Image 1 (cartoon, rainbow, N blue to C red):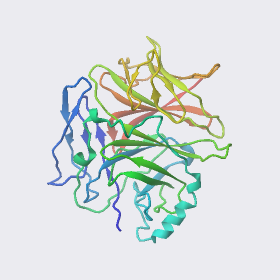
Image 2: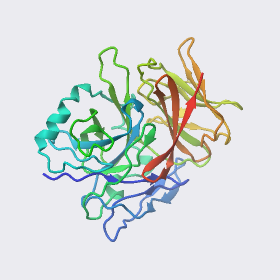
Image 3: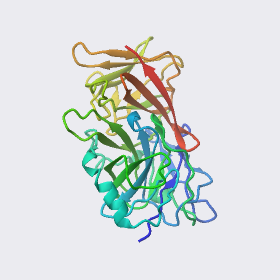
Image 4: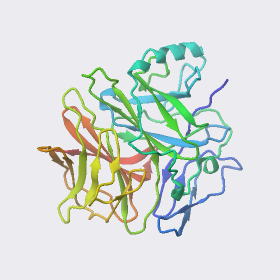
Length: 364
């Protein structure tokens, strides 16, 4: 059975619309469905963007990878449906072992499978709470143009996030994280499983944790994305990926706010390996972890605080946090050695084959 590689997409959401890189039939174009805004009004259509040809079959979902495990260095990744013997990939930079025996790849990855951490769903029942407001159905939005794989993306550096990639099928997939330039899915650095639901956008967060307790070092946080546009508010989701390093213990529950001015709270509480949760007195949070917050002035500092008694507070330099009206942001709190970083990503924007993100060091 021949597996085809991922279809790389770029999804942007300019104010009231979503733009998708897709692989399209019918001379490279498909009709563009609309996105709904949270006030019930009709938003703009999905942009009709020139695709990157990858696959002749129509995918049924889409995912992107957020690399928050700096100890792994720059990486690539492979994937396969659960139960299949052969991996597809490396997805970003291409494979040199396409003809390798399936058992060779299967055996190479299974040796490390014991290191794989669980899928963490951040306490969200994402399968029962589909992001219908976003008006996204990858099965309808992402068609394809015939053609073989043409990878050539740069490998994935720490604290960066890919654009979306179309995936044929749904259900449980195994990911193999390999070293950049490996050219093969054999001898992966780590393996783990994620569940992809049909017709949905998924972010898979790659993170590691200290393993003094003997637990698995790899944790894959699988999140369903819901990029709904609001006209006069900002929407932001915080992901807690600070799960411990050899130099620093895992952080407990966190809060994130904007320092200065009225000090608006961005996330009242975020638990380890999870996303923003609702809390009395905090901002409204939807089932996917997005908080609705008032727009923030262009120059502001982010403040990350441990909620435990005597906990540490870290503050960034003054920057434009990108929390203007109609913004959609995902912020990843991660560790690098003994330091702490907030990776702030504009989910409406892409740079090449990457989601537009900035790494903001925060200090006590």
